Length: 167
Image (cartoon, rainbow, N blue to C red; front, top):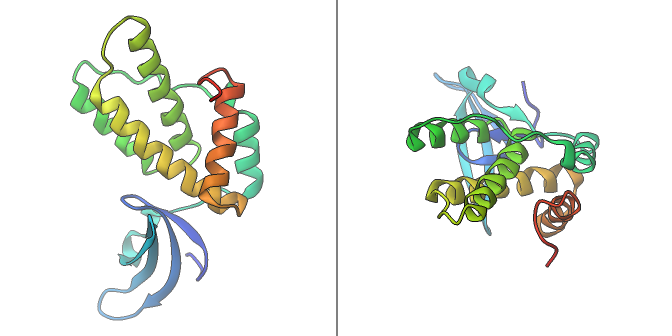
């Protein structure tokens, strides 16, 4: 079970902080999610606590950043883009390293399409945006830095890996 003050990955919200527990006919975990500048309180059933994941710690975050170039893209493909998008949305619910793998995968797919003079699937951009948001949130918590600093660290790792241009 989780402790008050612990950061967890909520399947729908991303990083949340455990702020309390409620007893009653259905025991609940009280979570606080930060979305932009607003904070939202959520009640999450204790009976489904196995769907929440602990955030990575500082050592795991540092190792993922250091090993970003070696991180494999997800090879999953499906002829139906809706099924493919659903698969990647499920990966985002797992937290890092999967969110970071999805970022790398979507960037690669967008770049590959552009190199073939094709327009990338619109779902690539949607998934990339959500995967980046979730990665930045989790790395900020793990490294105990601002989201801007976490974004800078992840950006630098992608630049160093040759994945994106330095700008």
